[in-house]
Length: 220
Image (cartoon, rainbow, N blue to C red):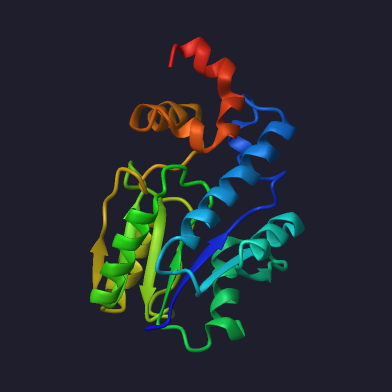
C-alpha cells in the first residue's frame, strides 16, 4: 500500500490570526514554526515515515519540511486549501498513491500512537476516514482511499460536507473520534482545553509559554 500523509501549512506570519489579540506577530511566528516542527517530528516516527509531503506558499515552512525529510510542493495562486490538496494529488509524487491523509500543523496534542492507529485503520478499509473537531463542525484529519474518491470541502462546517460528499458518491465513511486529534489551537478557549488534557504540553512545545500572561490571568 502506498499511503501518503500531507501537511498543508500557511506562511508563519499568516497563521493563527485569530490569536492576534493575545500574541504579537513575532510570538505567533515562533509558535507557528514550533507547531509545524512538532507535527513533522511526530510524523517521522510513524508508519508514514517515507510517504510524507508538505504544501505551502511559505518558503521557510518548505525549507523546514525538507530538513525533516518531507517532499514539498509550493502553493500557487489562486490560494485555498481545497485547491492545494488537488495540486498535491496531481503531483508526480502521488501518481501511484493508494490514499492521502491530510493533517493540519496545529494539532498540538498529536502523538505517534494516534497516527499509527489511524494508519492501521487506513490499511483495514477503503473509503473516507474523518476525524472531526471536538464540536463536530470542522475536519481535523481527513483520509481518503482512493485519493480522488471525494470532492474536498474544506471550509465552514466541513465535517458534514465531507461526509455528504462521500455519501453522494457511495463512498464508505468512518468517523474516528479522538480527544487528542480532535482539538486544534485556534482560540484562547482551545488553549485552556489543551492544558487541561495535557498540562505538561509546554515541556514538549516551549513556545506555548508565550501565552504565560493569559495562563496566569486565568489561573491555569
